[in-house]
Image 1 (cartoon, helix red, strand yellow):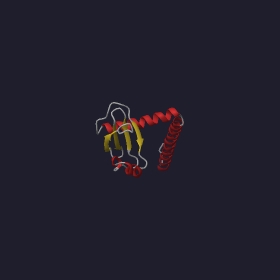
Image 2 (cartoon, helix red, strand yellow):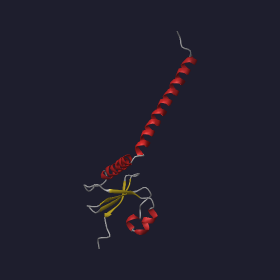
Image 3 (cartoon, helix red, strand yellow):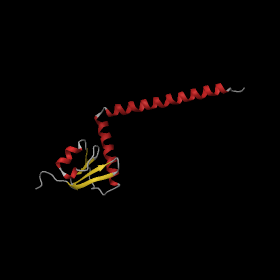
Image 4 (cartoon, one colour):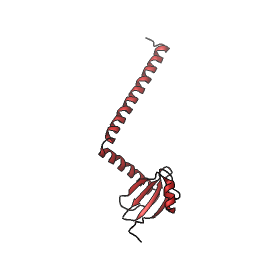
Length: 128
């Protein structure tokens, strides 16, 4: 029994459509699970922790870091910060402000370029 060229083409098309369907279904269910997880407080905290760990790990590759858990914020309005202090003059939207309270150190890190933009002492209102 020989298979014609048309039959081979039909089999290839069916296999391709089936593969695309299975990949789409898998992506849909994975996305649905992720959204369900993120709709909980625990899921959001886990996502935030994972992002913070990733940022600290990247920063640790280019500089020494204190042995403590930092506070991390994303810079959203760089112009506003640059007018308040020269420390922020080179910041860009999306840069990360990483604060180590006990070590009294502050880093500005640009994850997109794996670049330390600035490092300085933590100055609080308590200090004179």
